[in-house]
Length: 112
Image (cartoon, rainbow, N blue to C red; front, side, top):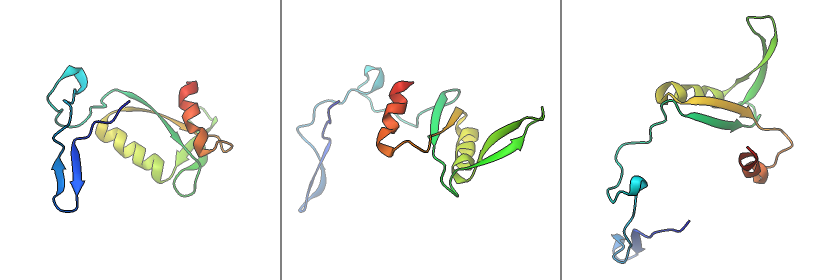
């Protein structure tokens, strides 16, 4: 991974286009920058959340079969639900174990 400078800043002129920039090659080997936004319709997203009141809390409910199941409630599950309805992705929400450190979260992604 390497960075490509596209702007440079000076106190006198503010932001200016970087004249020595290399050509940017976008996805699909295109030289034309993409327009619009990313489409997540039908894409499965694995989303990790941490238990933190009031953002994500655990609630035990009885399902239609009479079994105890865990339901996540709070600001973050509500936000994910709203985004899912608008963007039509398929969420796979996982509760991050309490013994995990922030620095070790990348390992969870790598292990899957």
